[in-house]
Amino acid sequence: MFLTDGAVPRFVFFTGKGGVGKTSLACATAVSLTDQGKHVLLVSTDPASNVGQVFDTVIGNQIVPISGVPGLDALEIDPQAAAEEYRQRIITPVRGLLPEAEIASMIEQLSGSCTTEIAAFDEFTSLLADPQATAGYDHVIFDTAPTGHTLRMLSLPGSWTKFLDDGKGDASCLGPLAGLEKHHETYTAAVKALTDAEHTALVLVARAQPGALGEAARTVGELADLGIDATHLIINAVMPDTETSEPLAGAIRAREQQAVADIPAALRTLETTQIPLNPANMVGVPALRSLIATAGEQPPAVSYTATPVDTATTWPGLSALINELAQVDHGLVMCMGKGGVGKTTVATSIALALAARGKDVHLTTTDPAGHFDDAMASTGLTVSRIDPEQAVREYRERVMATKGATLDEPGRAVLAEDLMSPCTEEIAVFERFSDAVAQSDTRIVVMDTAPTGHTVLLMDATGSYHREMVRHLSEGEQAITPLLRLQDLDKTHIIVVTLPETTPVLEAEGLEADLARGHMHPWAWVVNQSLAAAHPATGLLAMRAAAEPPLIQRVAQQTPRLAVVEMLAEEPATDPLVALGGQPR
Image (cartoon, rainbow, N blue to C red; front, side, top):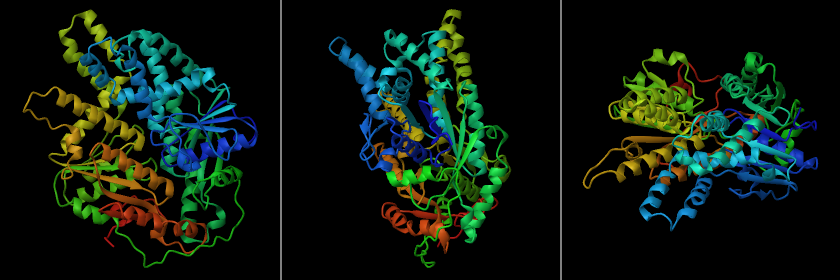
């Protein structure tokens, strides 16, 4: 396995569907390399990073050493901190030179989520393109955001390079035009680093599940379109064959092995390693070392000891929430949370159950990597996906057909150049999001959102749009913006989905705090894939289940509504309402 055989290239990216273990593997790889005497920089590009939680260390937008791991430093690219530093670099030199009104206008212009994205991306590209930025390190390990957000991040160097090559249009989120040539050089160098297979490895991480492996296969193709070749595949947290005496463990093992046997063709050429399920959460250096130690190996049979969860211990199921949501005929239901916690399954189950009760339901997703089963369209649901590429294409066509229709040919050429800016995607996707939110006035809209970091950026765009609308209103005028709908607890039901594990719960609490800053508040929490609710009697699963009740209780203390969905022997498919805790308990 390349992680331990001494052939690790200088840059290593870990990417994949949310919740598959990218952070654990990136951290474990970094620790393993430092154990070999290497000096390593571990970088998280995930807006919802939890690297600090893994090492129990406060990590931010500045490089810090990891206590207890000599040679390992870490950096979390904080989009908000990066954006503020970016704004100050642009605004500070012109303070006192320009009127205050113009300064205020510049600050507002640089306060949108596009600027936030560009600022984080600017730090990311400098690590790839500036040799001095990482001169003291043998390796730079990138723990990336879930797939959709990462593909966007990896595509930006090429998108901005092409935009600047083709014509310098309205690049306001980059700052003054005088600085564009510097950006051009940086982005070109970043593209070169990303596509250099000798110096850069891209590792896809997946679980032994059809959905995760299917997304990994799609990612291979999308990366190839960017000129980047995936090199390795890690299938993480595979149920060991030593655990099949427990019925639930045996069922999970069987379906995982079938998924591996049916692995998509696009993944078959990659160097592949399986890592077995670990009895403990991947928090702390000893746990990380044990993760790498088991790579590619079947662990020996171990007698795990744990007190089984009392079978009398029960929690409300998902149908308790559905019963309450079914009391009205319109409104917005938003499932939010870290990638891999099951937002799509929960959103789909809620939508199907409401449609079965005769409700007019629109099920949609804002996840760039989100996909619904084609069969959903035959269930009475309206099903859609906010596809960034389609949204951008239609937005450009519409602007050219309306605003462009009144311009002469030189004016149309300038407008067409401006619309090629990567910032156009932010506007186009936000428009689609706003349209979906507006539909909730007359029907029930169930929205499966992108993983946390991407969703927080979308919420930033919602706030920026609201501030811009209010700024242009005359005295006494009112406008119902998407933000006001999201803040209205009678119209919007935000459901935070998490797993009964320490890190996902901490991340969900962070999401709740982010929402509170925008005066948005969760209506309910769903703890998904609970082993404690499934009551395994013996073995590794019983040991993992025994650690869950205190975390479930922690969640219960901070939410007015809680649903706990048990881990299932079979994937929820035919009757999600029954499968996902069908009756209130």
